[in-house]
Image (cartoon, rainbow, N blue to C red):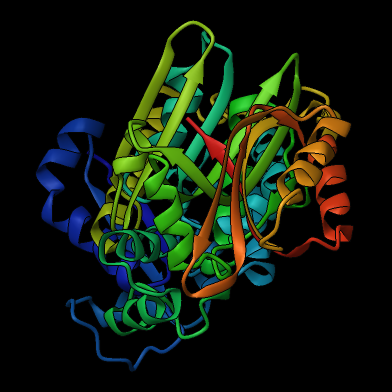
Length: 428
């Protein structure tokens, strides 16, 4: 049997995991695809670097173009990361008729439509399961499992770092900065955690999920993004008191082919299954018109879970190669992009206000909500021994984002309100 030859771009933790799985599970993989799988060439930044896996030095190069231009290689597995240079490698590989497996969420979020269009032109596969939620097979599920259904909502915890931080804050009553420092020491957060904690990483993943779920070209700029750096332990304590957990959620909703996508700290009802997802784990909740509620849970990162998704994609490419059907399963967005206006985006809201501790204040505040047709689910006013102001907690019924924007602007002008301490979306 003629082997299928693979070129690997990158040999970091994930690339090493790919090599371990391909070599360690060769018998099982070969039986699935009908031929051996051989890693023919590997491109690395530093050929002299010590590695915790033995690889034949003869197949290692520091020039990715040697891998791309090797006529013997059938499939390129890209785990090197980056955007500009990596995009050129992938487009050139596709031009040469090579199939692509990548874990590069940044690249696919920013340039996925261009890459998939080139793949369709050249009848090549581009699979990128590992770019979202690590070991959870959510991309294949959206493409194949929901192919007969219409997805109306995707809601997910798609960043393990922020979920770890919020989980620890909830379970231990710790502050954001203390838990962030601990996450950095454990290697869950980067020394510069901005991409994770400000929601940018999750936004890229939600752009990919929205594109697949709604069959339209969702760009990163279409995602409204807010991170967790402003979440306090007091916010989480209030959430728990009201029966909610705080999570950084990506939320994509579609109605009559108009959609909205956001990433933001959200209070989600404690009884909702996604509220019990803690630590570095990810979960993606998908609601289909026909199937109803489904949820997918698992490790969202890590060398072996991510490598498992990559090798599963590799197997799928090779099966298509044997059947002669490469390039036929690409989901190239075909629907016109229609973003919802703020008047058409509805959700419940939580607000914590610091106000004058005197009679009549509550009436002035509730009048503002009434003026903009925002009805209230609950209002609680309380004293705080640590705060000379009174505290008012408000949870609204579903209200349009446009109306809430007007409410917030009006509240900011009220002299009886000293501070709008917190404002969060409420789900579940």
